[in-house]
Length: 325
Image (cartoon, rainbow, N blue to C red; front, side, top):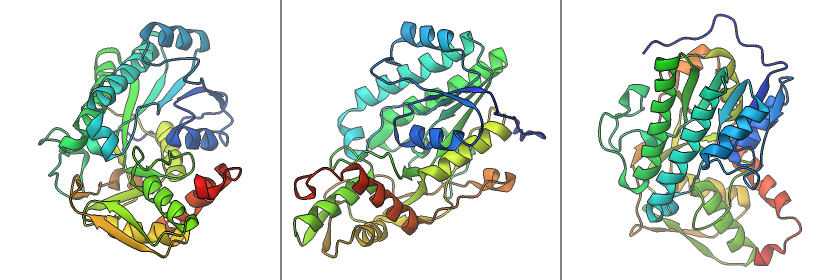
């Protein structure tokens, strides 16, 4: 697998770029970032196109003729949702990525960027995790179905590149957060789930919240607008069959994270950790040296990003009675 950073960055001005999954956390951030590039941004709502439907996906791509695709569409969720619904996480993600990548090939899309996830790496991978750790050991069982689907997407990109010469690349972001996230105690990722818990406890005058797990695992978090900037940087500068890590470069314990979220929300109650609930992988820090050496550096510190995220959350729910949210 040969790495390739382009000598001359691609010019996105005037390009038709389809952001698949534009209403989600990543997709909405990518749309914001691409507005700076002078390109034509193509989007379609899930209600108008089910990406799990091969025929309809191909028909849409053929009719709209994107030059490039950023594939951010996926079924996503936190540890509970992944553990309870492995069939949907595997099936939906397999169908979405297979249909979009195959349609891009048939319609001769010149470049595609597929978003994987840090969960593709083995449960006991050496830290920080390098790209070469992929498929070197067993996965974390609680999100294995999602991880297998994402690995299949990586292999699709590599296979279409190998067999047909397509410039399709795969990037692996670490855990993400920011404006556009899903705020639900049961199905969300850790930051929005804890932020919602802290918010409800604050407005309802409760003195404590429960946090899943021991609080000891370490996690790496990247503000989603930093990721969007990295994706545009990669789209312009990177062409390789080798996957590319995109991370913040530092991690925190869940206990530290919960405390920082409580501070951002203004909740000063007790954080009670329920060690009977699963922790997942103990540590998951990615080695992102390759993209950083090429010139991309994240700009948003975790406390600042949490404050921005909570501000966005409040604006989104400004018309709702906060006590009954």
